[in-house]
Image (cartoon, rainbow over all chains, first blue to last red; front, side):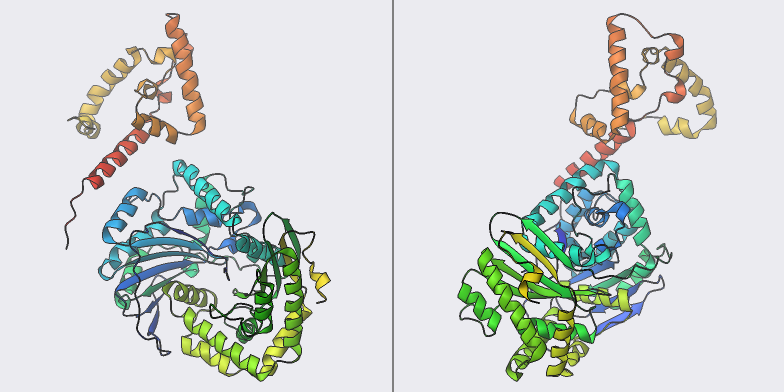
Length: 443
Length: 123
């Protein structure tokens, strides 16, 4: 279930290492943070895993698009690992395959994450690959048609997943511009040639927009490579971003097949106590069960299993200055309607009276979710990338978990009451003649 | 260039260049393609995969102009005719728009063959 829309293109899938750890400790791997001479912050996590990874996190997400270059972030992501002045795209792929590496480019609403996973000795080569994307990509005109094809393919693939479509629409309705920009370049994109992409790249590739996360790499080596490879990084200060504004509203999309309904509210920026409280609320009302069998414990989970074909899951998307909290319900249109009614009831119940049982359960799930997010390389990269780029400091797992210890039942009730006061966002996909509007749900 | 050549020697030597450039210009002017309104790159063989890929990399506008030049030259050739003197291709217009792309494509093909034939040695 897609909690946060992220668009990824993975290139060399020849050899994906799966490392299993026999134990996980809360006292997680040591994190070192240094600001390199070039102005780029370098974070490395010593995982002691046999395979390393480095990621370049750039503030070049779909949020950075303006009205005159809608869709350019998607194109920029697809220009990663293409022809540079040092090596052709073909050579990059072949050499990576020979070294047993894995290159990927991921786009989120606020960041573009260029990653490489490889065996320990190859740090120099892959740092060069990533830095060449920033400085030496040729943006050849003759590559543009094939990149446009891949953009269209990815958009088509995403459009086939209703969860992605509804979440994308929810953001568009809730935030309109900035965070509301679609992750996927649409048919009506304003990008028509590679010079448009080059212009955008020149704007976003500056020292204050970039940071580097490495896992299982030697921090000093990574720092030295950053100093030498990123010497010529531009230091222009990017213009102050337009703060996110929440609007809310309705979106109805008629499609055949299953119906999907997203009910969302203005959430909280990530790394705030309110966000953590919303995480607890999220697991309080979540309709997913943690085991394969049985009915699930809370009211929504039981409703979902009673309706048999329905799936109810909550999400809490946090960005640098706003967030989106809500539920995604899917099934037949009438089931979705009744599930949506129960969901609203549960939210109201959470705003008034939460039993200690429910609170303890939700707290435990929230803590687990936080711990799990510090477990995988991809998730760690995103967390640290966001923290460094948007707030300048890194917080460890221990600090993240400590936040939950401070909560009392009233905190969760207050945050639930707060979100219910705001204007809801509703996206209905499927049989829209049956699906509810947000005001038919007695919010 | 696949064959041994003194191209770079001449280009870098002011004496040799000054000596040979007028001869080369004279040859290009009487070769006949300029009288038909063509550029040198229009004459290159384009019925192979390398040239086709190189042609794909030329902008659509340039491709249209090329097609027009080739058609007028073909018509003139049928009529056993040439253009009037003002319409001959001027030396400054005789730009090599295709050869750089051809060189690029050849290099890429060689790179592919090199990688296909690579011998991997474990460190």
